[in-house]
Figure 1 (cartoon, rainbow, N blue to C red):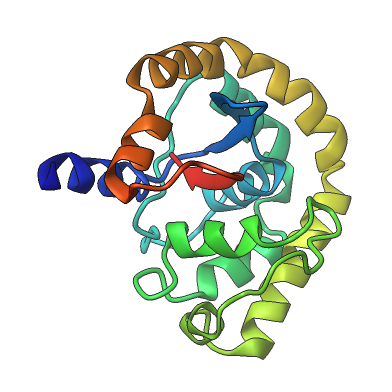
Figure 2: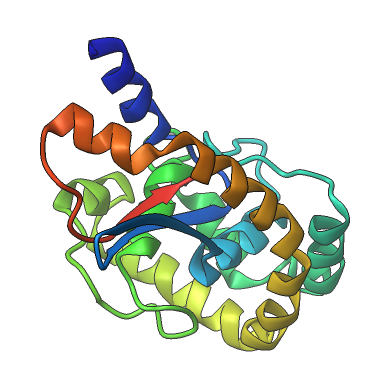
Length: 194
């Protein structure tokens, strides 16, 4: 039982580009898999990085869709958002923590407050001023790159991948495992980075 709980807890910490949201609807347990625009924006900025210090958790896969995204954004490799992202401490404010901050905000280009950003993340980013500068850079990148238009087309390319992943997740009954481990019924929505 404890090992199963540790496995479930580890699953909650895995980080890639996909955004997993779980919902409980009408007594039906289901996990909906989708692509989060804020995380894709961060991925676009990160893949243009000039820094040798890659934040832990960031993986650049050379898939056709990733290569297409890189080609689209390459002209912005010297954008302020890239240098602000590179200036953050790659170990302290790693990719998972950066993603966690973005999941607490509204979608780009606004990236406005939606949920509380813990003080710990603010400090790991180098303080409130550095965090705000980084977010301002991401907002500017989203506008300057016409990210919204790109994302609408790009997420269509990811449907086959998210479909395969969704089918695998459905078979695993993660919600049942969480309910069994906690002893509580699932009532709500949780965001999990994969």
